[in-house]
Amino acid sequence: MLTAAMTILYVANPLKSARFYADLFQVEPMEAYPTFCQLSLPGGFQLGLWSKYTAEPLPRGNDGNFGELFITAGSKEEVDTTFSAWAEKLLDVVQKPVDLDFGYTFAVIDPDGHRIRVCFLY
Image (cartoon, rainbow, N blue to C red; front, side, top):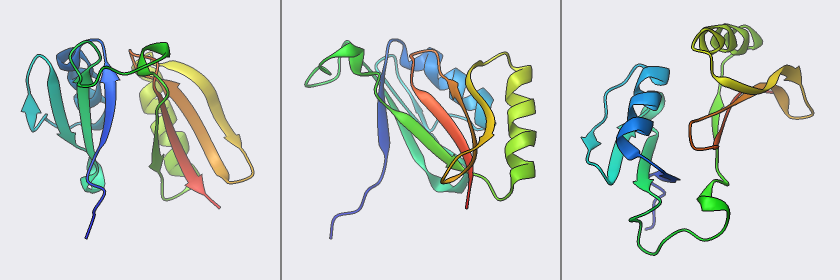
């Protein structure tokens, strides 16, 4: 049986990106190499960070920055609390908390241009 185990983002500097995500989610990398890092995020979600210069095969188009991590929250209050905490880290906010058709959400950008969305689903 096939099982989805991890999402991989192609990044310019895996070690730098791992520090960004480790700080954001208060976790330590499981693996940390110059070309690949892996973190286990809250809830057990696995995030891989692979150098966009050494990934095989190399990512195509727009440096591979098409991804969005979708993080669920348990309430609107948790969305607001997370937004406030992340805003203090001076993250690049692309969407402040807002009600959309699917839920209450906000989005920020990581150092490589990938979106990180936090959402309380309706």
